[in-house]
Length: 378
Ligand code: ADP
Ligand code: MG
Image 1 (tube, rainbow, N blue to C red):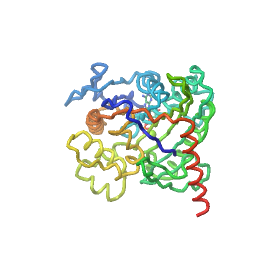
Image 2: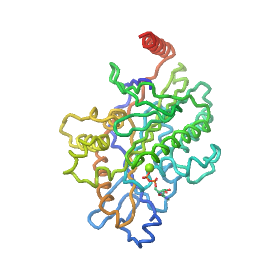
Image 3: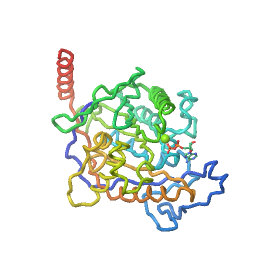
Image 4: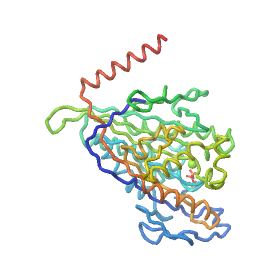
């Protein structure tokens, strides 16, 4: 994973965007004749029996995948091509539609081409298609698109694009500029949207295999799918510059992993190392919104280390909170809405990544090659 350097180009504080998606009743809820515990009273407001919450947008149960994509992710494509980093988090209890929102459909039964025609396709397959549409419409000839896909389970990072069955946990470290690297994480070159769809499918299948072998694996693991775009374009002075932007699509562990236990048991959970990352994410959000300059414990978990820049940093960030409409889930729904409300107060200062000229890029690559040589010789 290559280092990213940010410039002081645009320093405008921007609250992270927070939206809520309420899924339809599932079969079990319908059979049990569940009642609605939430009411979407306007495009930005959701009402529970206790409280009214206001978000950037509230998506009702009948909204479709395109509605979500068009509001949240599509505008980020321009940002990625302008050189920004963007992150979308899906946060919510297990079974409320995080993976449905991010991936959608059933990746194992779809051939790559089907994604474009499939209305169930979630944000990742759609963004893959649109990135290459954008490259074509901008007539960019010189570009490089890369994809990485990782899973974080029990504080161990594994590469979902590694076909080796053993998939050893990967180390994470910061360089002298503070940028985060994940050692040996595959960043696959992709040449069209089908390549991305294929990698998504392979990685998702590996993730599902883990789930069948380990109890509650999928509800406790986080996945981060990242698409990085390098393009070479002429700037206003006619000088050629390289721009780098990226988008992280994050499917978080089920929020019931912290919500159910309540605040009192947090310590116990932490000791058991169950979702340290989700707990730390909550703490980071809490401290970032207190505005009292307390130390932000990004380094306390792998997830917050990897995505530090997305929270209070220079990234354009959106959090999608997914909830069930049913009264049987009321407690976890309320915890999720409270968490999401808190996240609304986080301010990021999005900045474009430094535009690197070819000479600088060449220097950077030479240094990276030298470093790799040294490691090989060691
Ligand atoms: P999570 O990843 O949050 O655990 P999933 O995305 O796996 O939840 O969703 C659980 C089930 O509910 C899946 O079968 C999924 O297809 C379905 N589902 C979730 N959200 C929606 C939605 N908005 N519309 C239709 N079905 C949905
Ligand atoms: Mg899921």
